[in-house]
Length: 165
Image 1 (cartoon, helix red, strand yellow):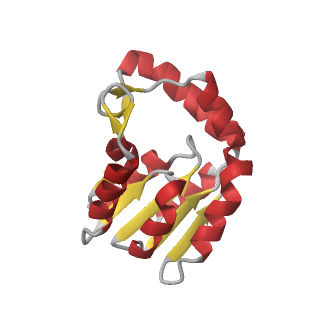
Image 2 (tube, rainbow, N blue to C red):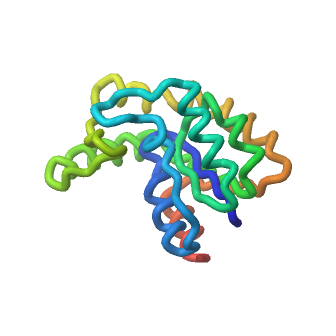
């Protein structure tokens, strides 16, 4: 495993898993949120974002976490391993709310200059992520014939996966 893509709903644990795997494997970490967001929640232009993502994909090794369904098809051919965190939405929402609360005290940012904050619209988007994006994500993953695909559907399965490394 040299190029590991971690995808799933917001709150599924992509970033946490990516950080732990990076520590264990010593692979460089690429957070798509860091490429997409500029300080102050300014969205990067789509073409500029895609170019940054493709530059990262062309590197020899990485762990890449993030949703970005809009460029998932372009990223898949670069990955040798795809981990899909298919975590129940109630768990995802709980994690987002908890992270939002704890960030008040920690000052955590999800991208440089972008403090963690969960707005109502974002929580609604997460609630509907499964019905809007899950099937498309699985369809795109199925095209990854050169990649090993790992489906993890609970926090316990994620913990068991990490215990192997």
